[in-house]
Amino acid sequence: MPKYGMVIDLQKCVGCGACAIACKTENNTQDRADGQRFNWADFVYKEEGKFPNVKFAAMPVLCNHCTDAPCVKACPVKPKAMFKTPDGITMHNDERCIGCQRCQKACPYSSTDVDKDKAAYSVLSFNAHGGTTHPFYKDEKELIKDCTASGAQVAKVAGDMPPHRTLYKHPEYESVRRSGITEKCIFCEHRVKNGEQPYCVVSCPAKARIFGDLSDPGSDVSKALKAHNSVQLKNNKGELLKAGEKGTKPNVYYIRSYKAEAKKV
Amino acid sequence: MIRERLLHKALDRDAAVTVDRSRCLGMRLDGFACATCVDVCPAGAITTGDDIVLDADTCTQCMLCVSECPSGCFNGSKPDFYALASKLMRLGRSLSSPVLGCSGMPDRKAHIKGPCFGYLSYEHLIFLAFFVKDGFQVDLAGCVDCGNGFVKERIKERLDRIASYAFPGVAKRIILVLHEDELDYQDITYDRRGFFTVLKNATLSRTADLLDRQDKDVFSSAYSEKKLPFRRELLNKVLSSLSDKERKALTTNFYYTVGADNNCDDCFSCVGICPTGALKVGPGEASPRLAFSSALCSGCGLCSGFCINGSLRVEKGFWEDDPFSFSAVRR
Image (cartoon, rainbow over all chains, first blue to last red; front, side, top):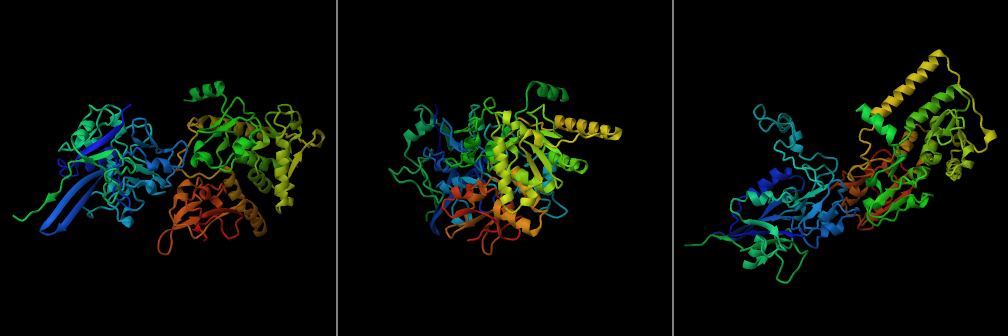
């Protein structure tokens, strides 16, 4: 049985955001609202120093698919709506989810309100009770009056919500999730089980993301981890796990750290 | 489509009781101590564990689970209770006391027959007592010879309890026929017009039944969906038609209040776990506050069992004016 994980090569990553856009298209996630990010693939940007001696680093973040996933422990329903698949993916079932947000509270990489917590991101997002997911496509207000189309018009003409919706079929997940539940990255399991790579991996123009079986020493992820020292994230404030620190045993690794520096010549 | 439905009806008997897993308290909250259905089922047909299962072969269709489950997890697939109630109401105009019978007793005379009386919960009985004003008889005389005979005692207990809660006069409208010679059955005679009306109604209801329930195989709804148990719906219907005194008696004995202490940090987890939607995120002065509506609360206690701060408590009785409106949970 494989144990899926991801390695992100920070020296290859240019912080272009193609993975985030690819993910939004593939998984039909909605726009940020009310302290929820809805970005299954997101970013942490770090700026250090004082002009002109400044450093800048970009770090793509996503669900770490932890081996000791606290979100799974926190899920109250039976059978659990948040669970580990045999191949190590932290899976979420949208039918059994009751929307209590305990997973969001338990996950060190998530916040129930990113803005209030001053967090950088949240891998778990919550579709508010009684609301509509993708409210933008119900909105009849035009961006520029009598000039542009409204979201509602676009959705009507395209016949779907959102118009570029990727209609994947997954036993646990709808391609657009309902309101009143949480949602998160599922490592594009609908693609992985068909032998494809997660869409963020495919879309990365710099090939900075490597996805594969951590238990197979011959896999690209294992080779990359053997060749380089790696770090893992500790929380959604951008801190890293120190050497020897296990945390929740995240399965997303970062190699070859990189900071862009402005130097006086 | 119709052909398939007819075939289905002929070959597979519709399950007498359907189980909606998403409403089961033990399924919504792992480890929640509720075994009402297991305790109440005399046949031992219900098992709870990783899933809640009703064994159709062992089930004697006494319907006690339907009337006891606090969460409305079990539902009798037949009959349409409102249709039954309105028929009793209509019959009451021409007959002095119509008879509600059991379809398991083909030899006994009744004006309407339904499943085993076990489904007649407090809420069903209160509803019938208030709406069928002319009264009716429940024919329990046949229960002596029936394997589900224990149901008779339960119905008696329930009616006695309703009577003790300040509705003695109303409860008397339901006459329990315990012995054969107590039954007062009047034949209905139809004139020509009446005959065709009956024929039309019967045909309509059969056709409706055939066209309805296309998704009958889908019993489980999404866990995040809020659903009011049918019995609560009945009670709410009764409540809106009552005098102040009766209203008070009903809300004191059959409604609930959710309160919180100062440990509540408005995390709103309980809003998610609540199966009925009695709790919601309401407006507050500075930030949103937890709001509660008693009319939507089944008193299941899931919120208090789930609250991480141990802050919520569910109390029997509702003493404020309007159970239908949402108001901030009292601290």
